[in-house]
Structure formats: C-alpha cells, structure tokens
Length: 333
Image 1 (cartoon, helix red, strand yellow):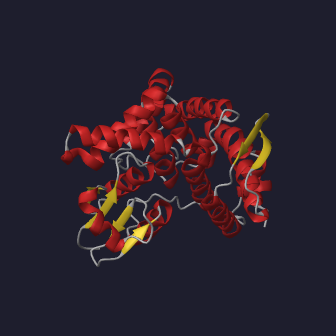
Image 2: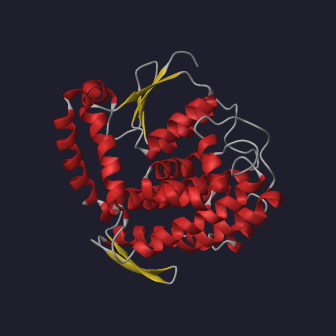
Image 3: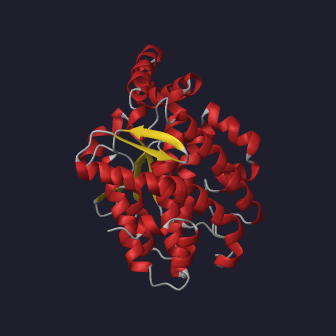
C-alpha cells in the first residue's frame, strides 16, 4: 500500500481515536483531520453517513464504520497482526471488541452527559473544535447548544434514572476485572494489541479524559490507565498468549460482563426491533432495565452471530462460550 490515508475524526469520538490508534499500530501513513466546519465540504464529498470516523484512501474512496475499517485494513496490512492465528482467540477478540463498541459506549456516554462537570467539559471541547476560529462568544453559544442536544440523547444508549445504577456498577466492575487481567500483560490477549483492545480502549480513552469517570479510573485502576496510555500509540511487544494463560483473569470478564449483561441486552434489543416495539423492558443483572431500542446494534449482533457460526467448529470455543454464559445468545438464529 502506498500513499497517505486521511482520517476525518474527532478527539471526542471513541470510534475515531480507535481507528487512529489502529493506523498508528499498523504504521499506515495517515493524516488526522479534525471534523469541523472548515472541512465539511471535503467530508461530505466522501462520506455516505454524517458520522466520524471517515477514512479516505489515496485512491479517493471513503470508508466508514470503525469495525469494518479495522477488518479491511487488517486484511490489507496483516503485520503486525491484530488477529490471533488461533481461531478461538480470534473470535473472542471480535466478541470483546463488540462488547467495547456497544456496551462500553454506554459507560462513556452515560458519564459524559449525565454529570454536569462532564457535560460542560465535553461541550466546551466540542464547541472549541467547531467554532474556535470564530471567537469566545461563538464558542460559548455553541457549548450551550451542544450540552442541551447531547443530554437529550442519553436515552438513545439506554441511560436513564432506572438504568443508571447498573451502568455505573458495570463500569466499575469491568475496570476491576481489566485491572487484574492487565497486571500480567501489556494488552488484553498478550504481548500485542488485538481488535479487542481497540474496541474497549476507544471508550475507556474517552472516559479517562472526562472528570467523573477519569477520577474513578485513576483512583481504582492503575493498570487500566497504563494500558490506556499505551494504546494511544501501541506497539507489538511480544506474541499473543494461549487461552490457558489468559483464562484465569479473562474468563471473569467474559462471564460477568459479556455473558451476564451485554449479550442478554443485545438479544432483547434485537427482539424489540424485530417486533417493532418503541421501547423494551427486561431484568438485567438482577435489576430492571428499560430503553428505546438501538437499531444499529441489531445489525452488529447479527454480524457477531455470523462470526460465531463461522468459528464454532474451532476446538475449545464452545466450551469457553458455554462456561461464560455466552453460547446461548450467540447460537440463536
């Protein structure tokens, strides 16, 4: 591959920084272009959706959606690898990436737009990116508009008074599990980052920059914070580990977060969309959960089930998924 890629993104977008970190790891020549009114015409020239990140290839093709972007460029630039040769680990990595993208986003978005210090901190940064060249008054006006618009969107990720305790408990529990797991290795699957790292990291990187979740992370999860910093410009420091070495500290994350919370929620969300329901309620983690269905996630659940169908013959995978309470959700048609 020759030429320079352009990444239109935002420092405040977990999916944008996820792609940027991946390009850094792959040593793919790229230009980081913050999304702003100054580049809107160029953005619209290549984007099919009004969303970042957008990668523009040297040939002038626009590519969107962070997971397909990573998968596409993993196939084009296989070294240094982010997909283990072991098909069991490769699927678990894809599952954890999905967990990060979809469930981890609930943590990040909830804290960012539910607590006032976080609201103003983020709104200020977004407004500065949008209006910084137009002066202080323009930034202040934009900040107020951003804060009002984004706090009104909390329900889209399932954050409300009923779900707040579970979202915050999941964030803190996942941090504890990840901190224990990362005590013995630099990345989630060993000596180099996997797709799982990029998916989870994008959300936790953003959380680390916000006042409330950042304080929680610094106080309770030093190994996670070191990993967050490492993943800004990740490097291959060794090989992927085998499952027996990873299992003692990775199985609890799969069982207590992915199998107990994320996949049951995913299945209920998809069922609500299929039924045309405008909202759904369920018992999740021993607590009541209710929200408006997330349409995009029904498609991504179908994709992770497709990946499972392709990988299910791998020796040992079914046993791991059964033990972690993930199998019953993935095996559904």
